[in-house]
Amino acid sequence: MDKPLPVTLLTHEFAPYKGGAATVCEELALAATGLNIPITVWAPETARPTPSTPYPVRRLNLPANRNWWTRFQFRKAFSTQILPHLKPDTLLHLAEPGPLEAWMAHQDRPAFKAFHGRLLLTFHGSELLRAIRSTGKKKRLGQVIQAAKRVHVLSDFTKNMCLEAYPWASEKVLVAPGAPRSFLSVKAISSLLPQFPREKVHFLQVGRIHPRKGQDFILDVISQLPSAIKEQVELWMVGPIIKQGYFKQCARRAQASGVRTHFIHGASGALLDEIYRRSDLFLLPSRAYKNSVEGFGLVNLEASQAGLPILAHRWGGIESTVCHEETGVLIEPNQKAAWVEAMTHLVQNPEIRMKMGGAAKAFAQSFSWTRTAQRVYAP
Image: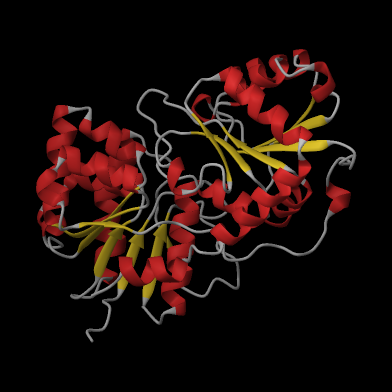
């Protein structure tokens, strides 16, 4: 059997940032190391790997954003910082939208052309959607796909979106899903959290405070719950504030909803794991927003691993992470009455929540970063 090639993974999202793309990059690097695949991660100057990180992380002289100036500077960083460290047989992994968009802008330069046939791409969803909606970007992305050895996607939804735009790429596209984070804390840190009254049913949503994540939608739904149900529930919304104006709208809706709502903006690691453990029902009302799409839904698997049933929109790649009426309930987008009905049913029937939560935990355990890394980095 051929040995896997050494891998250099490029990303603009990395620890301590905890978005979905950052999680994918960290977990793939960790799994590759466990498989004895040599891997080096190049990340922005804000990257802060822990002392126990088992693979090398090199920092680029670039900020952690994806504006036109960063894309321009990427060419210099690639030529002066990355290129001198690359071996002739290195597989270059453009693992999230930042490096991919920069590569699209500079791919005709000789230093970039040298990696034709040794490129590995990971599409998360939104970057693909943005590209295929622009004639110029669609063409440039097609050229990158032609130069790639493999195109990795996390869901059938993203695969179908890719092949609808580039049907000739079918032999290159590989579906290899994400999985829950490798390490979930077992240490209770209750002192860092407000009290969770155990007589309440705790709804949880995790994701950046952003219109695509649908926090305003959930708050509108909760405001329509019967009064008797409102008295039984609390809502926790965990995630960084991306749009301040949108957060203020959500805070006003929360105040008017009639349900006690907590916003926690900096939870990750052990704190987030503790919140999962204390919750009863996970909500993911992600929806279409401009050129943004939910390509997979890693948080669904994290919540499932904690034994939470999922209530989510049937949209994007979310169906890859929820089994309807087994590990949760999928609802067609923007059907508020259906959300009210499902929430009410699950609050009133704890035995159904328990059964779905047990099935969700077993389902989450069927996903593996090791298997995904084996397939993504196969010779």
